Length: 239
Image (cartoon, rainbow, N blue to C red; front, side):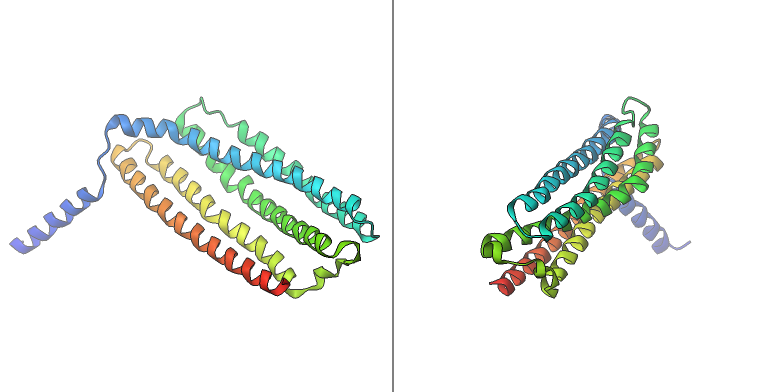
């Protein structure tokens, strides 16, 4: 074998070693124990926030029938609440199921249970959460028009293609914004399970997770800009 080949092999091996960040055994073991707890707190907070939002949203839609004395107001309130209550019950079941995952069990068992939940129940949660956001936006438009025009306004604002498009966009943006977070958590759980017994592989996994978080922040930033531009465009159309 030529000397140049040996140098190339050595350089490639040396670069590969440099790519793996150096973590102490204590740091790796501490991270392994903290990972399930960190994921548990994050998902639990997300579920609780969504449940509280749906309760407030249901009360907001009920207030429509009290504030607006038009024949369609009670019907709109009832339809919205009928949609929200099953979503609320479903997310409460998700929260109970998530709380059943025992953090005091083995790290591997806990990670696998969390991964199973993410691949099943959490995918459904993304849809229910996005749908409630669309109902929130619709309620906002409804109350805005009522405040602007008083009892004289009609529910015909829902026939405006711009407003309908914005309501649909709110669903798409909400679901799209949640998907990178779902992918990141699922990816991290999968790779933490695979690298649970390999300290070097786990070190490399920590590096990948940091890179994923940076990418996630960029995606959130772009989605925020899209939402802001859409809101400004809608404001110009209304004004």
